[in-house]
Image (cartoon, rainbow, N blue to C red):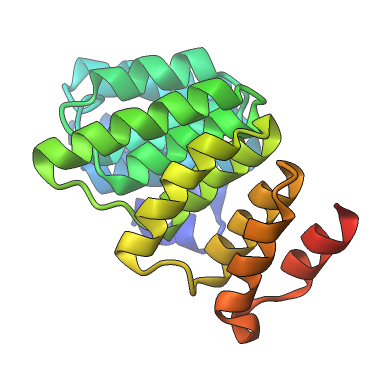
Length: 211
């Protein structure tokens, strides 16, 4: 019921159903927790989110990947990266989604060095347990490289892109073109652009023109 209300953007009813569940002595499921935490993001209500975090800690759910990822995402999107990082580090396991949330969160907060450090950690994590690197992860990492004009780091990400066959993804191709363009390597930017011009759009054209 909580999840259904949340999915239909009926946030007050979602919180009410969650509260009634607690009043009835029922422990909320991870899905119920995730739903109301996401509601906090939409409403920008970090204080309610902190209360939910405290309850999740009490019930031993905050370290679970599904709940932890949503808590980290909430803190990140509300501008509390220190709290997001703390939740993330305490999670018992991490997947591509949770790593992407952190990389993207650091990037959007302007801490591009931390974003790239998180990407490096994810690659090591991937070697150890097979966590998938996908188009969202590399796009976020390339955006950080672009902001820092970190062309050499970007080339390392590019090699991963080629290895995984992600260069034809529109978002990834745009991020590569933008990264090389802003780093002043127009030859590489054009080479990426020419891989599959049909997969490029106004974003990639703008990156080339503006540089």
